[in-house]
Image (tube, one colour):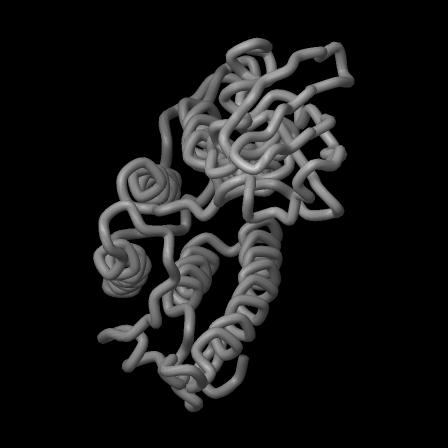
Length: 307
């Protein structure tokens, strides 16, 4: 991309990747208007598929005048086609739909996999309903609650992001639904207690996500200092991660096995990485300087007093 600027407008020549187009935009034009002008001529390169970089700085938000272009001189901007893009919301919806669909396939006990079936056991029914409840909740939150910081990401990330949940949907679905499996689960006080705890932790997870959504002004993606009942009770920055881990601790107690424990351990590790990174960001953001509040010093990232 070559830019020639006057005081009030930029003459933009887009070259490379099969593109050869010139457009003139005012200096006050937002970056999105520049991307829209390119997309109008070349619909294949819709805005979220474009990556524009000037002097090592990606052109994302704001106006063209904010990026240090020099008036009266040629300004070179790098253009890259990012390939097919999906919205973050679409990726999350597919990511959480997969485990339900895959697990359901095995729960139906197809004869070509398992042979003749005498029907599911009580343990298999409970395992299926709890697993499905969890991912349907996450699906609905992704559809109606979550506010995503980014617009889109490449198609390849759908498979990268989904591999964990889809893979365990297949593995747990297969081993849990072998005819006669989980037959040791009965309706007793322990079972009712574990189901209640699972649903309680699921509710806590949903509560945190709803609180974070309600605190943001409509249409805003601004970060907010998290405060509230579960933050006070748990003394952690991310009680949703804590509730998530506790859900799968309960699930593993109800349906012990190598794959349930592996799912718990790997999930805990990944959430701990995310929690520590975001916890450090929170402390840096709310540092008590320049009128910003001071982040509560007693909070740990994810596990009270420990992590």
